Image 1 (cartoon, rainbow, N blue to C red):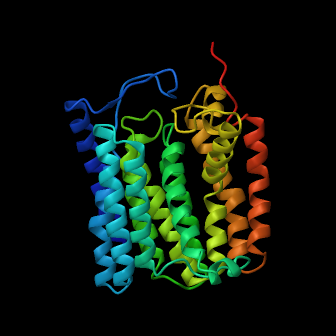
Image 2: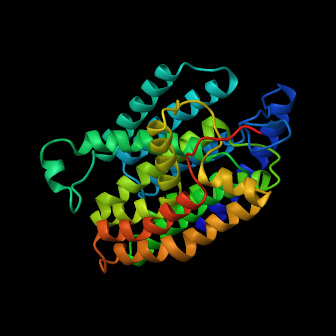
Length: 337
């Protein structure tokens, strides 16, 4: 029965993405290339709404089956819908950054409240005791939401990242014998897979802010939910999300230290530079899948099974990613031709 439900979620996302593509073309909701773009042709955007709709309309099923608490349901529905609506409005017409950021913090607070706040974690228990744990959790969710938007810059990347991270998180639960929390992750992966059929290089439609922001927030909520299940799982999730976290954070810090306006559009992320160097998006997206599956996932499982301290595992997993950021000069000032 569950397999049929997941297959229907995939088909619904696939069909809805196709409809959204026709809608975007008809209403001129197009991403027009400019000097800072990583694509060359006007392309419809907003396809991520298919992922949003399929996931949000399906998660109540898990609540009715007893696989999700009322708090978890409210966390995902309320915060996810708010971020998606704000993102869609921003796709249609620009929303001022302060207003958009305020909505992001409201959505993150909503999600945190539904999940019961930020649990105490190994190595940072003193922060939790002092009452700052949930504050850190709030900024963590807002940063994940925005970095996912930053990293959605080449064909297929945001989709393959979400699917591989969900697969890793699901495997953690499976090894721990926690099947209840596995299924919502599988649902999100199938919804993204339906969209990815249209977005894999060469993309026929882009995700848009509604979809990328939604994915960043929901994956962050999943990581906090996992921490309530087993504290070491939070470190595992940070490891699974390592490619996006390291590239986005390194690039932002490098631009800030270089005196550049971090909020301005650019294409100095490591993945963008790699795409230009290889002359295509597909090898970069596939390479990140390989990094996720053959490097980050084993380290995440090692930490999740208790064989390695979470902080040490995080440092181990991130070291090669920082080296890659250096190799591709992430965040460095772009030289005009």
